[in-house]
Image 1 (cartoon, rainbow, N blue to C red):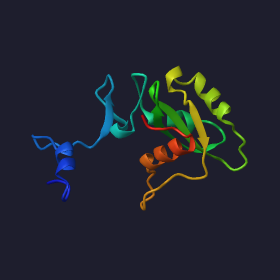
Image 2 (cartoon, helix red, strand yellow):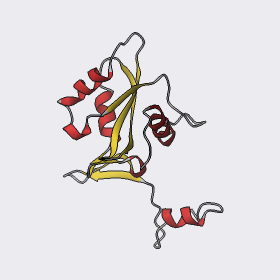
Image 3 (cartoon, rainbow, N blue to C red):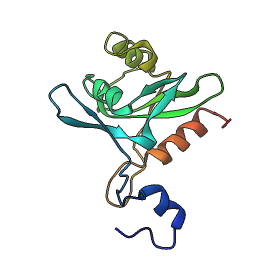
Length: 150
Protein backbone atom coordinates (compact mmCIF):
# COMPACT_ATOMS: atom_id res chain seq x y z
CA UNK A 1 0.00 0.00 0.00
CA UNK A 2 1.33 3.41 -0.90
CA UNK A 3 -1.02 5.35 1.32
CA UNK A 4 -4.48 6.77 1.74
CA UNK A 5 -5.63 8.82 -1.24
CA UNK A 6 -5.35 12.52 -0.40
CA UNK A 7 -4.79 11.85 3.33
CA UNK A 8 -1.11 12.22 4.21
CA UNK A 9 -1.86 12.35 7.95
CA UNK A 10 -3.59 8.96 7.98
CA UNK A 11 -0.87 7.53 5.76
CA UNK A 12 1.91 8.62 8.13
CA UNK A 13 -0.03 7.19 11.09
CA UNK A 14 -0.58 3.83 9.37
CA UNK A 15 2.76 3.24 7.64
CA UNK A 16 6.07 3.25 9.52
CA UNK A 17 9.30 4.73 8.19
CA UNK A 18 10.45 1.16 7.46
CA UNK A 19 7.33 0.51 5.35
CA UNK A 20 5.38 -1.61 7.85
CA UNK A 21 1.61 -1.21 7.87
CA UNK A 22 -0.02 -0.74 11.27
CA UNK A 23 -3.28 -2.70 11.09
CA UNK A 24 -4.63 -1.52 14.43
CA UNK A 25 -5.11 -5.11 15.62
CA UNK A 26 -4.22 -6.02 19.20
CA UNK A 27 -2.60 -9.41 19.68
CA UNK A 28 -1.00 -11.45 22.45
CA UNK A 29 1.55 -14.25 22.28
CA UNK A 30 0.97 -17.24 24.52
CA UNK A 31 3.69 -19.30 26.21
CA UNK A 32 3.93 -21.55 23.15
CA UNK A 33 4.45 -18.62 20.79
CA UNK A 34 0.97 -18.67 19.28
CA UNK A 35 -0.49 -15.30 18.40
CA UNK A 36 -4.12 -14.50 19.16
CA UNK A 37 -5.93 -11.37 17.95
CA UNK A 38 -7.76 -9.95 20.98
CA UNK A 39 -9.30 -6.84 19.51
CA UNK A 40 -8.65 -3.51 17.85
CA UNK A 41 -6.48 -0.78 19.30
CA UNK A 42 -9.15 1.86 18.74
CA UNK A 43 -11.70 -0.30 20.62
CA UNK A 44 -9.48 -0.75 23.71
CA UNK A 45 -11.15 0.71 26.81
CA UNK A 46 -8.94 2.30 29.46
CA UNK A 47 -10.89 2.45 32.72
CA UNK A 48 -9.00 4.00 35.63
CA UNK A 49 -5.67 2.93 34.15
CA UNK A 50 -6.78 -0.66 33.45
CA UNK A 51 -6.78 -1.88 29.84
CA UNK A 52 -9.95 -3.75 28.93
CA UNK A 53 -10.40 -5.63 25.67
CA UNK A 54 -14.10 -5.48 24.72
CA UNK A 55 -13.86 -8.85 22.94
CA UNK A 56 -13.09 -10.54 26.28
CA UNK A 57 -16.25 -9.18 27.92
CA UNK A 58 -18.30 -9.83 24.78
CA UNK A 59 -17.29 -13.50 24.80
CA UNK A 60 -18.62 -13.80 28.38
CA UNK A 61 -21.87 -12.07 27.46
CA UNK A 62 -22.40 -14.39 24.49
CA UNK A 63 -22.44 -17.32 26.93
CA UNK A 64 -25.47 -15.90 28.74
CA UNK A 65 -28.79 -17.54 27.99
CA UNK A 66 -31.15 -14.91 26.63
CA UNK A 67 -28.55 -12.78 24.85
CA UNK A 68 -28.58 -13.03 21.05
CA UNK A 69 -25.74 -10.57 20.43
CA UNK A 70 -23.53 -8.33 22.54
CA UNK A 71 -21.13 -5.48 21.86
CA UNK A 72 -19.05 -3.64 24.45
CA UNK A 73 -17.80 -0.08 24.03
CA UNK A 74 -16.12 2.48 26.23
CA UNK A 75 -18.06 5.61 27.06
CA UNK A 76 -16.60 8.78 28.56
CA UNK A 77 -16.49 9.09 32.34
CA UNK A 78 -15.25 12.12 34.28
CA UNK A 79 -13.73 10.07 37.11
CA UNK A 80 -12.49 6.88 35.43
CA UNK A 81 -11.69 8.21 31.96
CA UNK A 82 -13.91 5.57 30.38
CA UNK A 83 -16.57 3.14 31.60
CA UNK A 84 -17.77 -0.07 30.00
CA UNK A 85 -21.13 -0.09 28.28
CA UNK A 86 -22.54 -3.44 27.19
CA UNK A 87 -25.09 -3.22 24.40
CA UNK A 88 -27.12 -6.40 24.20
CA UNK A 89 -29.73 -7.63 21.77
CA UNK A 90 -31.96 -10.13 23.54
CA UNK A 91 -33.35 -13.36 22.16
CA UNK A 92 -37.06 -13.36 21.45
CA UNK A 93 -38.97 -13.77 24.72
CA UNK A 94 -35.98 -13.00 26.94
CA UNK A 95 -36.68 -10.69 29.86
CA UNK A 96 -33.14 -10.13 31.12
CA UNK A 97 -32.48 -6.93 33.03
CA UNK A 98 -29.25 -4.93 33.21
CA UNK A 99 -28.79 -6.20 36.78
CA UNK A 100 -29.08 -9.80 35.52
CA UNK A 101 -26.34 -9.15 32.98
CA UNK A 102 -24.01 -7.52 35.53
CA UNK A 103 -24.63 -10.36 38.02
CA UNK A 104 -23.76 -12.92 35.33
CA UNK A 105 -20.42 -11.19 34.75
CA UNK A 106 -19.49 -10.84 38.45
CA UNK A 107 -17.72 -14.19 38.92
CA UNK A 108 -16.45 -14.52 35.35
CA UNK A 109 -14.31 -11.40 34.92
CA UNK A 110 -12.34 -9.04 37.14
CA UNK A 111 -14.51 -6.49 38.92
CA UNK A 112 -13.29 -3.61 36.76
CA UNK A 113 -14.43 -5.49 33.61
CA UNK A 114 -18.06 -5.76 34.73
CA UNK A 115 -20.00 -3.26 32.57
CA UNK A 116 -21.25 -0.24 34.49
CA UNK A 117 -23.92 0.33 31.87
CA UNK A 118 -26.02 -2.34 30.18
CA UNK A 119 -28.34 -1.16 27.42
CA UNK A 120 -30.80 -3.38 25.59
CA UNK A 121 -30.89 -2.53 21.88
CA UNK A 122 -33.00 -3.71 18.95
CA UNK A 123 -30.12 -3.49 16.46
CA UNK A 124 -26.57 -2.27 15.98
CA UNK A 125 -25.32 0.37 13.51
CA UNK A 126 -23.86 -1.48 10.52
CA UNK A 127 -21.72 -0.69 7.51
CA UNK A 128 -22.99 -1.56 4.03
CA UNK A 129 -21.03 -4.82 4.33
CA UNK A 130 -22.73 -5.73 7.63
CA UNK A 131 -19.93 -4.93 10.07
CA UNK A 132 -20.84 -3.28 13.36
CA UNK A 133 -19.75 0.35 13.57
CA UNK A 134 -18.45 0.57 17.13
CA UNK A 135 -17.70 4.28 16.86
CA UNK A 136 -21.34 4.97 16.01
CA UNK A 137 -22.51 2.62 18.75
CA UNK A 138 -20.32 4.51 21.23
CA UNK A 139 -21.81 7.83 20.08
CA UNK A 140 -25.36 6.45 20.37
CA UNK A 141 -24.73 5.17 23.89
CA UNK A 142 -23.23 8.46 25.07
CA UNK A 143 -26.32 10.26 23.76
CA UNK A 144 -28.71 7.72 25.28
CA UNK A 145 -26.94 7.80 28.65
CA UNK A 146 -26.62 11.62 28.51
CA UNK A 147 -22.85 11.43 28.88
CA UNK A 148 -20.94 14.59 28.06
CA UNK A 149 -17.45 14.31 26.67
CA UNK A 150 -14.70 15.62 28.87
